[in-house]
Length: 78
Image (cartoon, rainbow, N blue to C red; front, side, top):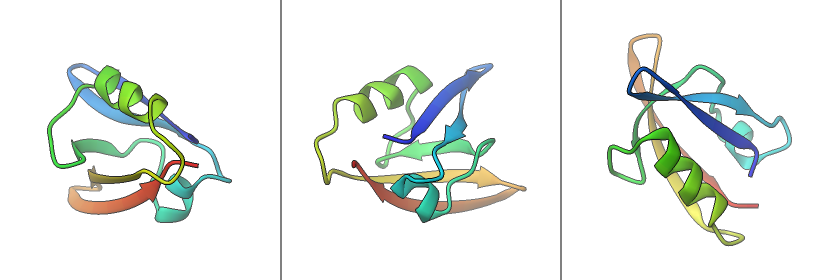
């Protein structure tokens, strides 16, 4: 999928983003703090499960906190 998430305390944080993935092309970066994934608060384990079970073309919406500012990104399963 091109995106891995880890827990930092109780907070999901983007660990790695593959430079060839739609997540990378959407603008997501390593270190982004995930506030909402597909509209809901989720743990890193829940996010990884959703991503791993995704079908080609499934869309994801991710709200992250970066440098104190909330940003929203969309990417799709490849």
